[in-house]
Image (cartoon, rainbow, N blue to C red; front, side, top):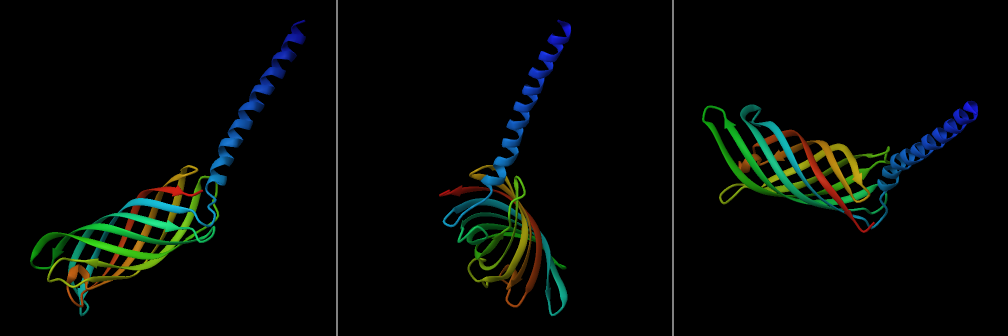
Length: 199
């Protein structure tokens, strides 16, 4: 009798572990399926972008800049991989000018480009993006031209319709801070939240 009881307990335990393993496999597999997006899906996202860079004129260092952007953007999946995107942002800039001290300003920016999404690995979907944009700098200042911006990062799927994004980005800017013929190069990182519509 003790042998029979022990065998029955082992069978129950085996079934319990099989059920747990089946549930775990479903949970792991679900994000991979959720991360696949077909044509017609729209992505609404918000993100914060932080950069630090420097500006030059005729090869001479002029200033350094710390910049924080808050953006809202919209992407449209043309197919599983290609996603044209546009974004509108508020830009806060703190500038340290050589020999003159520091100052700050707020501007607005508009950009458009193309994001290329790669096949997902579980919860993670890598991407690269590139494009161009403009930034207004207030009355009496030149409009800044951002061309190009380029970067890449990953989406971490939270649900079949939501993800958090992490990325690194480079921007080349002419008429930097609204100053004619001043150029700048920015390197930064961003984090944000995406919601996918029309799945």
